Image 1 (cartoon, one colour):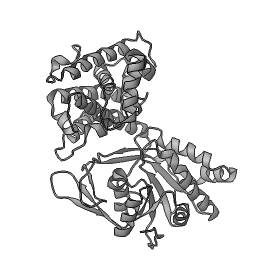
Image 2 (cartoon, rainbow, N blue to C red):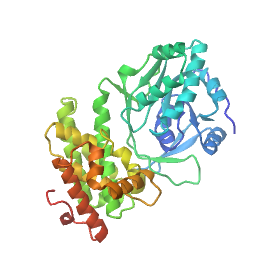
Image 3 (cartoon, rainbow, N blue to C red):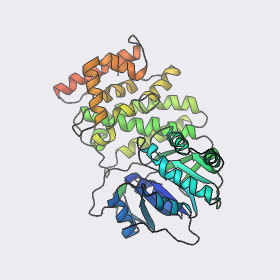
Image 4 (cartoon, rainbow, N blue to C red):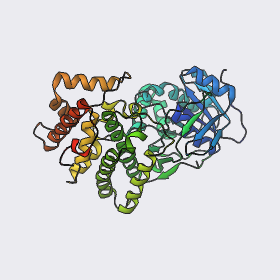
Length: 416
């Protein structure tokens, strides 16, 4: 079913690039509940047609109760349909959001450039773009791609004055969900969407989005989420993989894995508190860590270890969820041995589902050796104490994985 331009008097319009589980179950749902008519833009024609045909979908809150939120009205268009994008750009559009994945983000430059050009030609006012991706510099990455797409100097000047590129932190677990309805999505009850108030443009009408928290200290929120939720999730996945667990729930239910993840989060937490104090107090952060571990233990979330651990090279980038908190601890001479264990576990991740990055890691280790790979990833010299600890952890856990014996504290590095 094709897209038809929405005409809803008095109702602002939001365009959400990405109609996947996070787009529908988190960002689109929040925008809809805040009073927007949400138009999803995606490359999946089947999803686009279903959204236009039904004009709504159900979000299942996975908390053990029958709790369903119906999100409506919604529409959709193909993100490659520039004529439809141009038509939509003339509507009372005040926010553009994305949830497509960091690697896909630059591809949105072409359709968003069409929106900018159309609004400039129509002499329309400011609009905000919020890239809701698990990447610290996601919005900047999108801005750079858009600047390349807008070759005309007048277009770039218009964008500079009228387009807000808002940095944000998003936090909600949206696992794969089984349903006979193609649009249904399952989500955990908790969510947090925090946006940098300093990067927002004042729009007309200036819409307050309930469910989106604006702050002038976003860096603290971004790092807290990335170095707690994402760090813990990744380490639980990699340890779970080594111990032949299928889901995060199975992994975190293992007492030893739970203890290691908890210890890693307290290590990263010490650095976060030191850096961002008094914004985060010790007591507040301990409660946050407790809540994160409870979320991992949600009996109704069946999130697969292979999905959470996928693309290990991206997760092993400097500044990301594994090496980011390690570096923060190193700078402050704080304990970080358990975080190093998480890095070593990531290097052993090799599922059979065709994860190209996991395959690349294993090929590099086989070709160049573990020391060289760790050195390249971290930037540390071979004689660095932490590099040698990672290699020791890697060898111990590799030996354990080969033996496939029961996971016990004795199979872990003795120093832990």
